[in-house]
Image 1 (cartoon, rainbow, N blue to C red):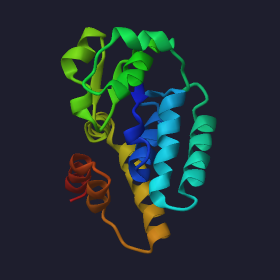
Image 2: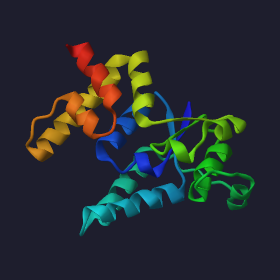
Image 3: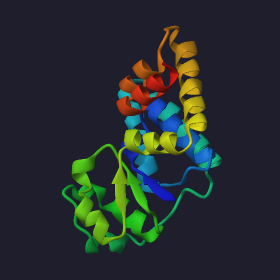
Amino acid sequence: MRAVLDACVLYPTVMREMLFGAARAGFYEPVWGARILEEWALTGRKAGAGGEAQTRGEVALAQAAFPDALRRYPAESEKRFWLPDPGDLHVLALAVASSADLIVTANAKDFPRHILAEEGLSRADPDALLLGFYEANPEPIRALAEEARDRIQQLSGESWTLRQLLRKARMPRLGKALEHAAG
């Protein structure tokens, strides 16, 4: 399965690490375009001084980890599509040009299912996608979540349950499933 990752799912660290880990584990093939990477890099400004530089470093690491993920599309192809937010047309054009199966986004309203279906695409939010992967093969997803938790605990000095961490990372259903399986 090939999935275009919208910029909004790349900036939150835990979400990105879970998505990248699932790709490394072979659950799907990630796809992005130059504009998606630039949008991701610019979100680093929210973190204050040095945030953009750090995020650009993360972008470079992602490109090195997934060298085949960067895809191109003819810019004029955006003109044949319509979405509620014209600023997202590049994501749809990229998905179609790269023969993706799915757009992974946290902005469901910007990618109506009926429009995506006309192009042979579907959409999923990261929580639903990762929960589906977990239901199909629990251990790799559990290990990814535990690794993410361990890194966050080490960086923050705070203790987190998987459910707390994933809820904060906007993946509450996955966190609940992991908690119930452990319980």
